[in-house]
Amino acid sequence: MDFLDYEEETEINESDSPHQSITKLLDNRELLQELRATPSIAEFLKTNASLVLQAALTKDGEVDDDDDTVDQKQRYTPADRRAYVASEVLCGPDVACVAILKACADSEECWALLEDPSPVSTMRDARWARIWLRLLEVARYDTIKHAPPLSRFAAAVSKNSTSAADVAGALLKDACRRDRAVKVAWNDLRSICAALDVGASAQLLLNALPGCASKIVDDQRCLASVARARSTKALLVMAEILSEAASGDFENRPALAKALAPHSTRIAKQLSQGARLEKVAAAQLLRGLARCPDANSALCDACLDACADSLFTHPHADVLHVHSADVLLAIIDRKPLHAHAAKRLERLLFRDNSTEGGLLSRIRSTLTGLERPKNSRDAHLVVLGEAVCAALREDEAKPGAGLVPDLLYARRNELDAWLHFVEDLARLTARKVAADFA
Image (cartoon, rainbow, N blue to C red; front, side, top):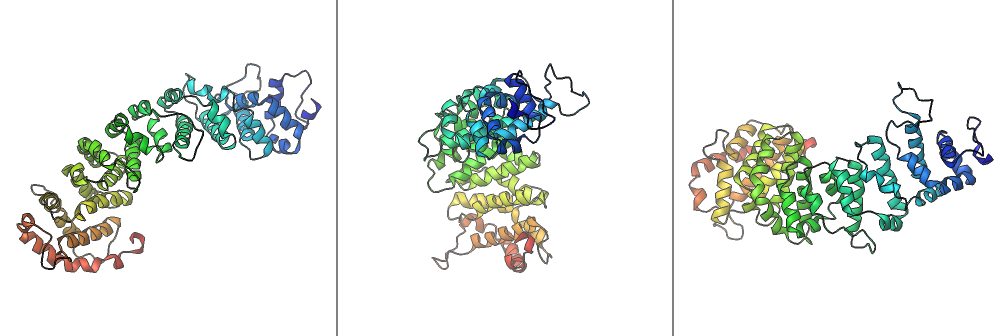
């Protein structure tokens, strides 16, 4: 093995076992450069690819029994450094690196981590995901051929292994592509959907969306499980599904509104009382729901109240304002030609028996005397105010015929006060919105 002695510090004897030779090679941080220049080294590593993979997947902080160079005060052990070098070799862009990685495609070591009972190791999991995703890129057929069933990923994902979620998500996303002739046969997602609040299950589906959206919606049990999940990432899963449903070629859109309707009150509570990220996720979900057919029935009054309140209780939450204002616009833009739509609009605009007041009075109190919008909330209130004016305007197709039925004419006094304010609102149109909020 004279060809291995390419560095003065590396002492490799012919009596060394392959494991010892691989260990000494990985101790050299310049191995990747030497690998590119020396074909014999590449061939040796390819022959012993399983040992390279084993080194790359060493547990964080693991120490070899015969390693007497370990300093307990060190943050990283020599095995950690060898694992890093091994992962760089396997994921390298060179032809030699790709050949070594392809030799690992049929190794059970690729999937052994899924059933490891020990706690999740951050660095090892990250290396494993990187190696696997690179393997899918350079040897897709062989990787899919040896990929385990989805059930084997469930245990690792339930332990909050985001790396397992990334890998399974990539496989599932690939399986949902219509242009793939060969793909993993993962058709039953019920186990993942049922445990959406556990571990990294929600992250798995987020990685596979929007490709797997139709699979979830077509299965009533999967859809029901996703709809009742409560975690922040579970809300994002449903928001992504609703976003995909907005496309014209997505079927079963009414099924989404029907499945979410029983949970709308709980989602509104999460928007009102949740943490910051939970509020944004809930508002994003309601925004997608507002774009579905029959949104007036799916969005309960508590949802509209929560969206309206978020505009005034969080004046600087830009992303939250975008989602909440879009929900309200979806209700306001639906012309109140029918009594049901007019009743929803009346409640939103006036909100009787509420100390906060209705949307009209709150917009007036916030924007009166304002020369120009100061933040994202003010800019969205201007847009909402103009939408209200458009909703109350007469039908252009039938001059003289108002859009507002008798139900809203009972609010003449409040509407008159609003119309007087419209003159001030005209000065705050989009042309005068500050550049940061335009």
